[in-house]
Length: 241
Ligand code: GLP
Image 1 (tube, helix red, strand yellow):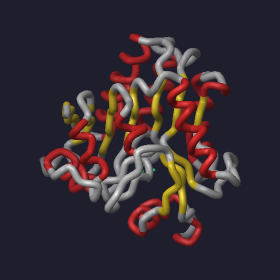
Image 2: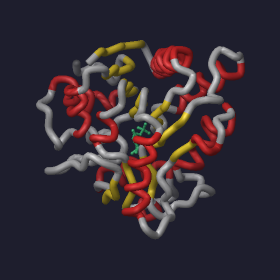
Image 3: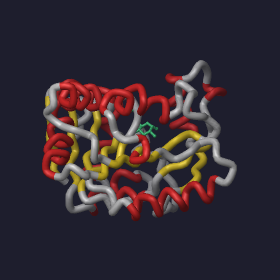
Image 4: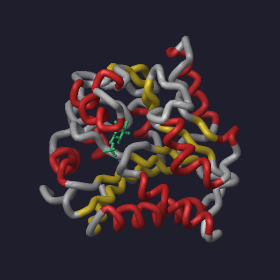
């Protein structure tokens, strides 16, 4: 793992944007794996600014989002479809046909998962996968468990994640209980992985990710097995390393 430690959230966002920009300028047809959450909002802000200045372009980029809640449609303000349009897609001109996010309202979720996995393969695989991390060490919505799934699948969210994500909803009861997520295999097949973390509430998960045993109890610890994994951390997130 390569670890970049910067001062704060702004520094993390700028450093991550620099890495994405390098990738886009090296390969115009880059396939990006995208994450949601408060951690990556600053990164998307930086990318929109760079795009506005003409320093990067998204015309030939293909994207695959990590996950989506089951039961929330694209118009729901807490859906990841809505988040992505608000923070990135609404500003940078990626052709709609190249944007991929798991559908949270499809009846046949198993089929949605299978098709998503096939679409990633058909696009040639992910060049750069952006990740946040849950306080419990989850990546995407791959929650700590005795077993993890390799491919895109349906998942029951853990009580910890429901509680952590309830800050975005009116009440805990409004948080969806299930989601579709890319699997740890879908993530690990990316050519490069970049995980971002900010704030001391992520310090424990980061410590276990970097120094802990490789275990399904901390899904992010599997990243130790990836040859091209970059962690961009602010001082607080890196404080236990
Ligand atoms: C959600 C997402 C993850 C994200 C995590 C952390 O559960 N499914 O992909 O990494 O939250 O979110 P935040 O960045 O808001 O702490």
